[in-house]
Image (cartoon, rainbow over all chains, first blue to last red; front, side, top):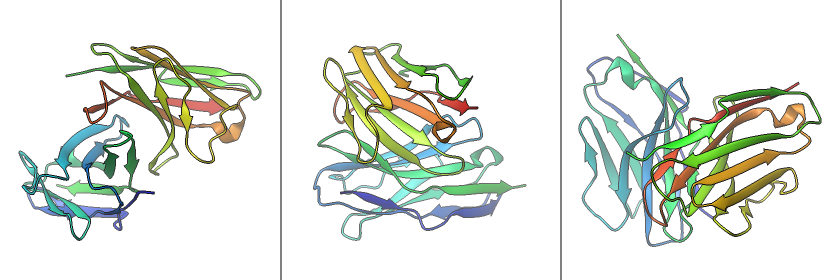
Length: 114
Length: 115
């Protein structure tokens, strides 16, 4: 069974600074996907970034980038130039290529301070 | 982008009644839909996988007779919470994709409160 662990329940960062959220996972599958989702107070799940496990290059989406270490089963999210609108709960998720299921980590609540 | 519509957004019901939640894919055909449950400030817990035209696959510990899932068409899946009790109060979220390994889109969720 797959597991996803986010060891930082809460984090804070000053506006315009950089913050990194950590995530580790465990799986016996070879082909899979990894995701970071943002859940603001509205509770709508918003995809931040997606990484295919077979790709060595780290995914990047504007201010958001990941550090994917496949051997270490680590998938951290870096948010650069943090904005007040980045305040939300962030979930790391493992996606099985076999079933399409997403398994989520416990979440990290991020607060961006002015 | 693809849109998944979920209704109702919130529902309050009396203990013992049944509640139906709908999840629709508006601009694509969803061969697979997933149902999640989320308690306040906690993670999303996968309840079941819904495949069009076949029986849903439930995760371990989820009562299939309590949470009835129907995926009768490629654009609609429903979750019925039968004989709801206060402990069933939670935030329920659906998600849908066009196929395996395709992008997953989430509904806006349904807050269920059972009195």
